[in-house]
Structures are given as structure tokens and as C-alpha cells.
Length: 400
Image (cartoon, rainbow, N blue to C red; front, side, top):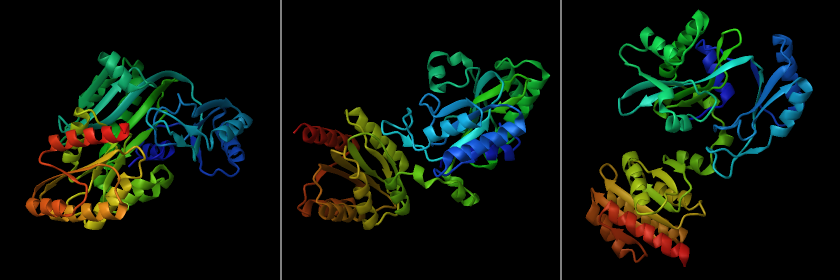
């Protein structure tokens, strides 16, 4: 689950991480006047005429897309807010369609002497949290990792003992922080970030940039938090942070049906049970030259109705030229999936090629049901065979 910058900064402050003062503007009506009032309040409190008006969307790269405006005075903040509210921002993370700005954050300007990258996430290979930092803040960390990997410093946190003081010093020395104030401020902040990451059940907590001000204060100028949905039972407050406008209708519908669904940009719809098998299916489709149109895990207890809903959701993408059903029956029985596939095919009048690979519990009954259905369903014995078939069938349909 993603949240907005202003929400992440509220959580940062709760854990003692310094952030600039800021005021969210959440309504389109009268946005200019509200932004001007927010700017005036910040100017009065800080004595600094410079404020920053930031678009709030669930995507990085807002600055490069024109979603961050540094202005001077309340009148300029009003103009910037009126320009940004309702604007569609296109960043590398939004796709070509972009995202419409529906919320803003007006923030005090700072005297920035230096920008740093800092983040905490899970290293799945080492099975523990990792803290990463780089002297190259304010830019795409992927670009730094590719071109200047020596500028990225990492420490791994032992869950049994937590982040140790010597690890904080390792990061601070790697960043070449200067003076007692910078070292102390950074160590305190990174310690708070580590505590926040665990207590708030994060999958990532990122500050890009983390800035050192002219008076040697270390401040989180930006904030990004993703929550691990597996911890949702511990955090009833997450429901209040969710922005429904940032969730695609198809993803919301899938969630209601108990399906794990993420829309992608490819041409092959995927219906799979199990996240690991779903990822392998997507990789195999790409191996044979296709592009998956979605990640869709129906889980272990899907009903016929859920399978039909899954087909309907897949077909909301106009780019889909074929569907690959790849099921390994364990808890989920192959005959149940077969009934669902048959029902969905009949109900939707499916016009794109459909390849089905079944294996596991009740597989022979599932295959019999599909064969005797009289529908245009192509069976496959293995995942590789099925992926190759659907890529070829989809290509033929697209070129017809």
C-alpha cells in the first residue's frame, strides 16, 4: 500500500525524523486561495518567503514532470497551486497515461547545502532489512546504481539486535558528513528510520533527498513509505490513509473479489494461482517474446465466480490479445478452475485465444471438462508449452 508524501511526513515526525513544515491542500475548490493561505502561514512561522508547492501522487519523478514548484510569496503559491491541481503528470512510474493531481502539499523552503539519498527496504536474498544511502541525492537511484555503484553504501540490519551505532557511523563516514552536528543529526535520523520501518510494517521507507541545511541540520525533504500489506491486521489506521482515487477501478474490484491483481502494459493476460507461479509465468511469457498484461493470483480458495471476475478484469485491457491460465492444483482444485474457465468463456463470449495448463489435484477431471465443453480452448501440458502457444496465438491474432 502506497501513501502520499504529506502522510509519510506525518509518520516521520511521529518517530522524531525532522521534516520541513508543511500544510496539505486536499480540495480542488478554491485551491488557489487555500494554497495562498497555507503559504502565508508558513512564511509567518518561518520568516522565509520561499515556499514549495508539491503535487501529491503515488509516483516518483514528480519534480522532473513539473509537479514541484519553488516560489516566493503567497501570490506565487496561489498561481502554482492553480496550475498543478488537476494537471496530469507523466513520470517513469505512472506510464504514458500519467496521473491526475488531486492533492497538493505546501511546504516551507529550506537553505539546502547538500542532498543525500537514504532508504530502508528488505533484501530478500539476505533475508533482512538493508539501509542504503548515497551522496547522490535528488536523482534516480537506479541511474546511480548503474553508473556509479561505488557511491552507494549499504548496511544490513540484524532483526535480533537492530541497527547498531557502528553501522550508523559507517554510513555517515561513507557519505563524508562533516562536523559533530551533521554526524549526530544523521545518526539520530537513521536510527529513527530503522525503528519506524519495523514498527510501521514498511516494505520501503525512502528519503530522496535527505538534505543538509546551511546550518548543518539533517532534514527529510521528501518522504516515501510503502506498507507491507501482510501487516494490515496490526494497523487499522491504514484505512484512513488510503487514497481511492489512486487505485485503478480494476484493482479495487479485484481486491473486493479476493484476487491479487496488478495491471501491466503487455498483451498476454495471465490467470495463475500462487504469487511465485505467477511471477514464473510472466517470466516464461517474456522468454518466448510476449509481454504479460497483468499479474493475477487467484489464490488457493477461488470460486467459479472469482474466476469469471478474473477474466472480466483481464479483458478490461484493450491490449490483451490472448489469455494464459496456468494452475497448479494444491488447495485449489483443477476441476473448480475448469468450471470457472468454461463459465467465464461462455458468459463473456471470449474472442481472444485461450490456453489452459492444469496440473495437480483433480487434473484429469479438469482436462475432461475443458475437452468436453466444445469451446475453443487450447490445452497445454507444461508452463513452457502453454506460454509459447499463447505468445504465438496472440501474435497471429494481432497480425490478422
